[in-house]
Amino acid sequence: MANLYIIANWKMNLTLAESVDLARAVISNVKIKEPVKGKVIVCPSFPNLWAVADIIKENENIALGAQNVSDRPSGAYTGEVSAAMLANVGCKYVIVGHSERRQYFAETNNVIHDKVEQCLANKLTPIICVGETKEEREKGSAENVVKEQVKQALAGITLKDSLLIIAYEPIWAISPGAPASSVEVEPMKSVIEKSLSEIFTPEQIRQCAIVYGGSVDANNVSEFVGPGRMNGVLVGKDSLSAEDFSDLVTKAIALYE
Ligand code: PGA
Image 1: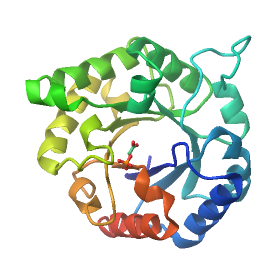
Image 2: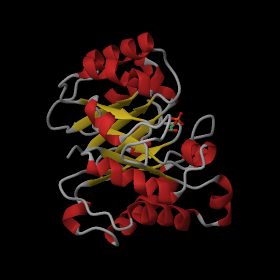
Image 3: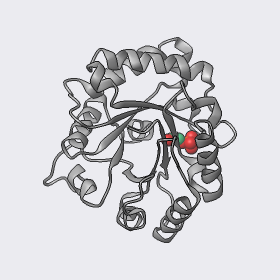
Image 4: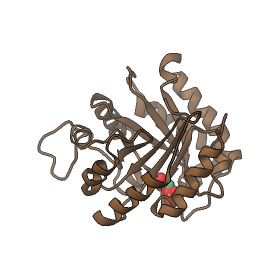
């Protein structure tokens, strides 16, 4: 598996033409070479996946991800998109349980669990987002909230040869909030690792990566990634500019060279 994942969450932004242009720019700017095992994952909106897949094709360093998936396999669920459909258009990754989905679309830990199952059944790597609110951090319950989110999302799940990514995204740090600092992020990495060790075998844990998300940019990326730190970052706002995002990726890669 890669030691560095940089995930671009384009959220509900960009037209078809803009998505294609940005994907082209990312491909031409991002060069990842040994010894760095890095993966850039771009996550456009549903209607633009197919066109971006066609641009990425078999690129070794850049992969396609979706921002959401249905918790059901198929059927009369108007407006939903299944994991099989995403795999079929070339997705390899899916963001699951983003805080914006939990907050605005009432996604519960149970629904997120079923989405993870759908991803794994269709050979998609779920990027499971967890993170506490500002109030939960102030109350001192951040660690328990995250532990519970990880535990419920993965209850009864076994990893065969699939990968799994956990994205720690404290809700208060997502832009326009201010980024967390390594002082807040590093202890949460241990909390997540401990939760995973209660669910998976050591072998399966080696198939898991933990990334950080929340106001990451080229200036602060070194705070979160690098040998011994998180395995990557999930980037929203800064991933919408080819120049800023390429700068961020270049700086992150340099930390491993
Ligand atoms: P941000 O978004 O980088 O704009 O804070 C991160 C996310 O919500 O995934």
